[in-house]
Amino acid sequence: MKITKIRLFQVDLPMKEGAYSWSTQSYSSFDSTVVLIDTDEGITGAGESCPLGPSYLAAYAEGVRTGVTILAPDLIGEDPTQLDRINMKMDQLMKGHPYVKSAIDMACWDILGKATGMPVYQLLGGQLQERIKLFKVVARAAPEVMADRLIEYRESGFDHFQIKVGEHPRTDIERFKRIIEVMQSTDTVAADANTGWKQHDALVVVDTVGGLLRERNLTCYIEQPCLTYEECFVVRQHTNLPVILDECMDGLPVLLRGYRDHAMDLINLKINRMGGLTRARQIRDLCVALGIVMTIEDSWGGEIATAAIAHLAQSTPEAFHFQSSAFHDYNTIQIAEGGPVVADGYMTATSRPGLGVEPNMEILGSPIFQLGGS
Ligand code: MG
Image 1: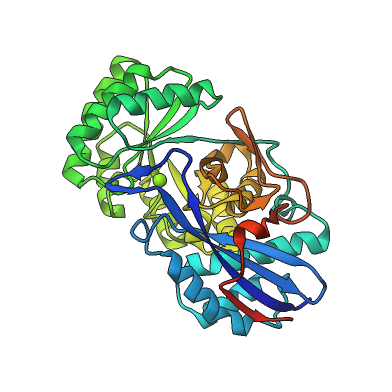
Image 2: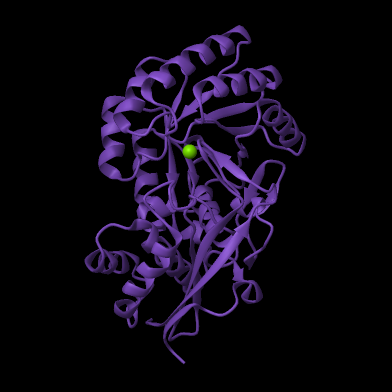
């Protein structure tokens, strides 16, 4: 099989809740890129990469699109079903920039699934979970608003919540106080600072919050309190609260370092930070072998990126899967049909071949870049 055409689409994903705020940042819409890859056998694959704005990670939407146009000429004529070969080729053509390669890699997995008649989760190891535990993000807002939203989300079926903090330690402690008042013992809560605290502030927050939680016999996960691995490690050494590392877990070397140092209890595995499903699967399999539990998600996206999350999570043993995000559930527009079905705090990937999604061409519009084919 050969790649004959690569098309690129830009789409804005506005938020149902109006704004998505974390740490010191806030967006009402995210800029996503969809890649469609056509083949000489009439199979088309879809991939998506959506950075969480330009200053969350070293990734930005225009960078995805420019990067794909640089890679595309050398991918025409390549066999999309040879995933390691495609990834080796992309790495030869461009050093780093995993978020660019992610959409292409994802589209190639979609093609492999359609060519073999199998859902991607089957190709990634098989269906090890029937449905995927979701968490709901309680975006950063005034403390009482966040507490009310947690209650509202619980009433809609969720029991895993990620509260966004990391703005200012004093305000964040007020947020914790209100959240802890409404927390129930059946809730699983992670407080994600998204790198926002300085080390000394993080130490004060986890010490204060740890005391408040103990008074109610509750606990809370602390996610990526500070910018660097080293700062997060210091926080980890001074708290009994379980620690999740996210932004700094950007490849195998730091994962192995964290494992050796006992620097985290869980990691957050984001598909486009790793460069696509091929590399995310390597990390996933290593985490399972090392006994590290994962949140499996991406930086953001619509139905296509969320389908990739669902297939990777569904092929992960339940004991090593903490939770995932259904990003398409936060957006006001639907970029594809057949996205994962969300119900009662879980999502399920389709069993159709490939990722199981059908891009909505009316929403995607005309390609902003196209190479090859007719
Ligand atoms: Mg996080």
